[in-house]
Amino acid sequence: AAKRIVTVLRADDSVARLGGDEFTVTLDRIEDAQDVHYVADKIVQVLSERFDISGYEIYVSASIGISFYPKDGADSHELIKNADLAMYHAKSLGRNMYQLYDQALNANMQKILSLESDLHRAIERDQFYLVYQPQFSLVDGALVGAEALIRWSHPQRGVVMPGDFIALAEECGTIYAINDWVLRRACNQFQQWKESGRHMHKVSVNISGGQFERIGLAGKVKEILEQTGISAHHLELEIVEDFIMQDEAKALAEMHAL
Figure 1 (cartoon, rainbow, N blue to C red):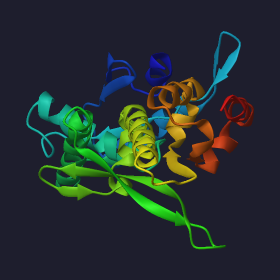
Figure 2 (tube, rainbow, N blue to C red):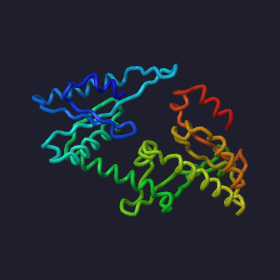
Figure 3 (cartoon, rainbow, N blue to C red):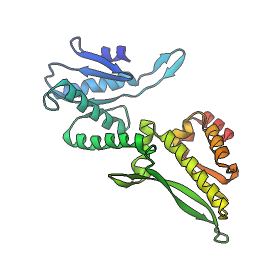
Figure 4 (cartoon, rainbow, N blue to C red):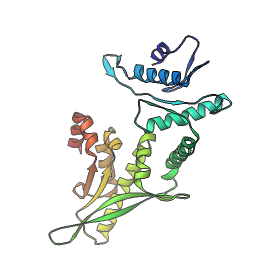
C-alpha cells in the first residue's frame, strides 16, 4: 500500500504510515485546491486495484480526510485531528471516498466519536435493557412468543434507539459483546417466564450481520443455551439476508451448524 501511494505523489511530497492501516500525506506548495482533489482521487484509485498476496487476490478500500493549513489548523496536531474527523465522515459515506474538513462536520463527528466512546462502556455500566414485542397466534389470539428489542439508556441522551447505535457498534467492533449480552439476557428472561408459569413457544433475537460473519456463532449460541437452561427449539434467531448472500458457502455452513 505504501509503495502504491508513493507512485502517485511528487518527489517533494511527504508520506508516512502512522500505524496499522493509517497513512498521512503532506502536500507542500499547492497552487490550486483542485490539485488536492486530483491526488486524493489517484490514491483511492491506486489502492482499489487488486493486491496479489500469497496466491490470494485481495481488494481494499480507502477513506481519506483532507485538511488545509492554515484554514483548518495552525499546527500539525490540529491538522491531523481535523483530517481524521473528515476521514471518519468519508468512511461513513461508504468507503473509497474522500472528504474535506469543515466546522459543521467537526461538530457532527465529535458527537459520533463521543457516542462511540460511550458505547465501549455501556455494557459494563449496565446501560442496555430489553423490551419485548409480543407475538400472537392468528388462529386463536394466544400469546406464542416475544421478540427481544434492545434499548440504550444513555445518562445524558436518554433512551437511544438501535437505529442510532447498531451501525456504529458494528463499525467499532462492540457489536459482538452487545449481541452476546442480548442473547444471554433474552434466554434468561424466557427461562424466568417459563418458571413463573407464563408459557410461550419462543423468544426471538435479532443477529446482526457482523455477528453472523463471526467465527463460532453456533458455539456461542450453544454455550448460552446450556448456561441459561432454555431448549434450542424455544430460541428463534432473525438474520439479515444481505449478509448471507455476501458469502453463501460460509453462511450455509454456519446455518447448518446452528
